[in-house]
Length: 136
Image (cartoon, rainbow, N blue to C red; front, side, top):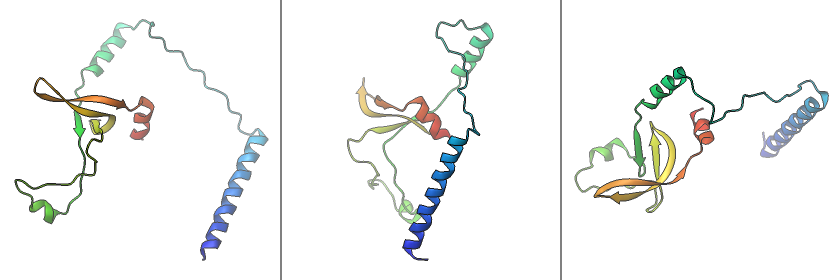
């Protein structure tokens, strides 16, 4: 099969899909109605049961880590590493670090020093919607 035949098949499939979608929209077979959801209000009082459940969740420990970069090397090269060896990472100097919670990216940040200890200043926090999409 030539490349041109492949492109013709692709174009035909796209045209067929477009026709099918147009037919569904015009036929009215699938009436779409918006879902009715309760409005959330921060002023809504919480029951004692809800507070207890929230307290239980808030006390769950999580692991937060900062990732400077990654590298893949062979086992042969791994076994040859010793004191003074340098491993090249996939990140450019000055690029923000990844902030991970239980292995899930939640933010980017830069290293800071506070009272002789390292810390991280968050420069970009991943939105909740994006974090949920990554879980799927």
